[in-house]
Length: 306
Ligand SMILES: Cc1cc2nc3c(=O)[nH]c(=O)nc-3n(C[C@H](O)[C@H](O)[C@H](O)COP(=O)(O)O)c2cc1C
Ligand SMILES: Nc1ncnc2c1ncn2[C@@H]1O[C@H](COP(=O)(O)OP(=O)(O)O)[C@@H](O)[C@H]1O
Image: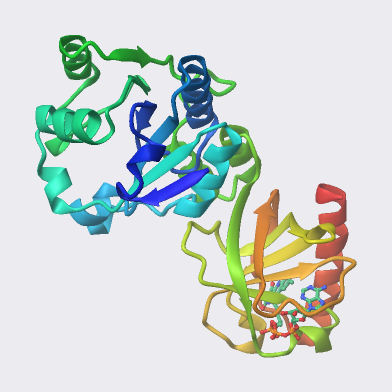
């Protein structure tokens, strides 16, 4: 799969079946769209293309209202690849792009740059300056230019509600990780690079890999059951998010204790899933009390994730 920052290698995307959107989270609705794009492209023998934006347009338009991201651009590309997408364009959002009127966006991006053969979008697609372009605008422009357009039905959750990145963010913010997983079609996960901490974990009997450089949303402080995929197979993971209040620390950390594992993880990239919240962060009266609780946490992780 080809991940491009902007319009770098036109051969990989020109003349394809295209869908444009943020695709943050690549949730069940996005997956249906991406698979439909891939299927139509195979039928026509052309590339399947997703054009997305990195950063999210609201980073420029309303930085204080920018929602936390659910997926990095690399994770988005990986998940879209699994849906059969050939090329992901991560457009480095700039003011010029956001100023384009819907008709200009259609002409300059969809026709001149992408040379799209067909477009596939969801029912709430908007495009151009101030999101002025609607599905109706798009229908008119596509029929004027003889371009095929397919609008997909919304994908709903069990209660009939449309799956959305907003609801997934809400579920994660409230610690409802099983609900987030239902909407995503997989457990929520974050990736980080293992850095060094206070070197206390090994003395507690529970070494923890401290994950740094996490750029996506985190669930609320507390302990989580999950898994980590290592080169030699999966491991259960007890993850703590929050400050080590028992030791008088204030800095928020994300630390993963891998069950049934011993080895050096420094500098490695780990992706940890969050299956269920076990409890909140607590301040314990000393190391022994914390250790006893961590033993209970780990037993719980085995029940949930094992
Ligand atoms: C499963 C688990 C639960 C934890 N729960 C708490 C907690 O409730 N309160 C707290 O202060 N620290 C908690 N911690 C964090 C420990 O204090 C931390 O791992 C330890 O101080 C080691 O820090 P270090 O990695 O910087 O050496 C938890 C860690 C794990 C792995
Ligand atoms: N079961 C394990 N889970 C997590 N990390 C482990 C494990 N076994 C060994 N390690 C290694 O030990 C390090 C953590 O030890 P710790 O004493 O908590 O130090 P630090 O404070 O630097 O995180 C991890 O970064 C990893 O390299």
